[in-house]
Image (cartoon, rainbow, N blue to C red; front, side, top):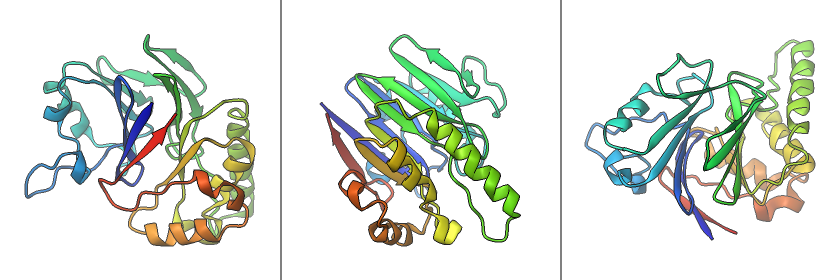
Length: 242
């Protein structure tokens, strides 16, 4: 079974499974010069009118959430929203709290507490297990108080420990070049203690080349390099085969 993954910018991805179309953290608006389809990295609801669509938002930050996603319901009959509960409540949406499990009938959603805001999602659908971290990451900032960075390390390891016994097919993990030499702490720890059949870095913004260079240079990640696939261009699609 092939699963198509399309990069929508920053931490935004569309995942097309056998029967479902999942959208994670899509915040980008349509370009001013007209609509583009998924080939251009933009969701156009007319293209999804006949599909089962589930929209996930991990938290309310502007680089993960844009209220324009709710307008898609005007064009897509079978659409539902799974939103972190730090987002203003939306009628009909599942408002997801950390450390909960939700049975949606044709999929299940398990949540984890972010080390920033909101939640991370572990979704099981069509025989796949898909993890989207949102902003759950090992944020280690230069210049921050040492106690803050120590607490961050502890909190991150605690949450990742809850994933240790999960079998994950696809994982979306932050790699943020703003962290400098610490940008890979999160993904390295994840790969050593959890892992996934395919890992897709995210949250690198316009610094994708810098993030890709760091990933290639990491000795910790060397044994896992064949599992890490990094899209660099908005609208780029990759395929996971199971």
